[in-house]
Length: 199
Figure (cartoon, rainbow, N blue to C red):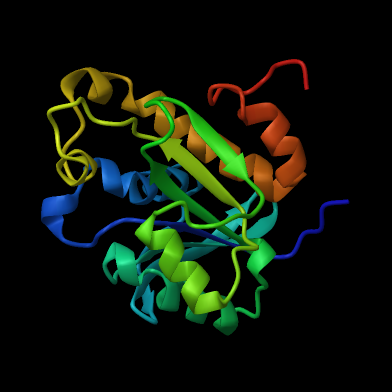
């Protein structure tokens, strides 16, 4: 049974303006979309995070973007969680994933960092990987493109044209997780990132 305890929904990214709308910042972009859709203003600052408090379908949420760099995301998020007295299983992390094709997403209930520096920092800061996450696919680069350049690069023109439904899908997945639980959400969304109509 899903309880109505508050949630932190944290998007991962880098704070500098030069990283805006890069692949590595898609977590920030999803948070911005959720905030826009639900009228939540990201104007508060605490523990090196930018955050806003509001409600999604009656459930209290704290939307946050850590203002430390990606590889130092953990302490700000865990400090905010302690401040609001929330356990790890009510911290939903949204991040980019090169192992998933662009346009797809995958929900995980828990796990390791898989080489992602933002997740690694959260696991190091909290001592556990027992938190749900939405992995938003950015795909791997071509053979002649460096992985770092790909991750920190802007979306290609063809990707930009399809970015809006990706952000909307991830926002919908986050809403479903806090309302219906992780397991049901995995069944709905872990099929090429498209919600199943028959569930």
